[in-house]
Length: 122
Image (cartoon, rainbow, N blue to C red):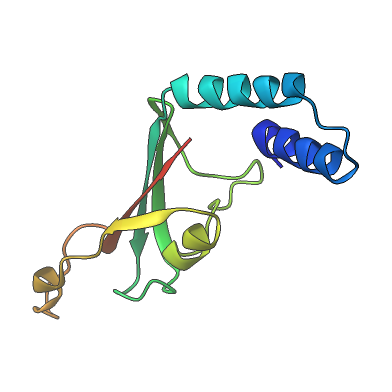
């Protein structure tokens, strides 16, 4: 739970018990202003999969987070997500699906597989 959400819940509890005061609302307003003033940063996740299904197993992952290129691996060396679908369940949004024109020639393979590009803002 975020700090702002916790502060709203505290105000709600005080309101229900008739203990909510002007100072509580002013503190909440200041917290909202601080939250809105913080710049949001875009993170990108590249998932190369076996086929064009979002549930297809990942072959490779690349992660750009807070301006840094990360490997996208757990400390044990496994991918942080097993598929684009698993990343979506963790709050990532697909912004690019695989180019299907590259898959039309079954005799040749192109690149690392089917590329999904996902984003989220922090």
